[in-house]
Length: 150
Image 1 (cartoon, one colour):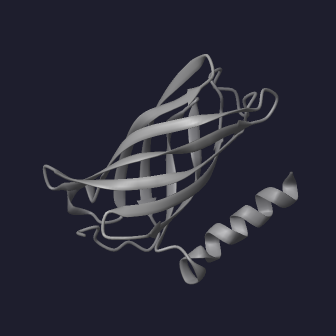
Image 2 (image 1 turned 60 degrees about the vertical axis):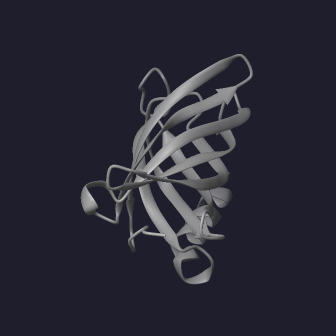
């Protein structure tokens, strides 16, 4: 497991030069407090692909919960703008890894370029697993930001 985490960190940190348009530090509330890294690649004018890994505290807010790692990957579709922020519909697969490993899907609304800051974005959505759903709020900060004005 340690090797997989180290490999993922190296991929994310070097993805800016290799494949991804954006690498971001993300954090927020996703099954407890969450902190991680995300990469994104622009596919067309309206579509982007993303992948991320986070560590979470879990619902009981202990240092490391039952499922301390969350990985997700999916697609983003540009809807237009909401106020002055580009809005995206995001969906894909998500997995919580740990004692009670579980897999499911996610759907969210992402608002980028918050307060005209191209590095800052907000993600509101839900992880959908068999039998239960977890709402999440994520705030992201892109390491090397460019305006999202597509």
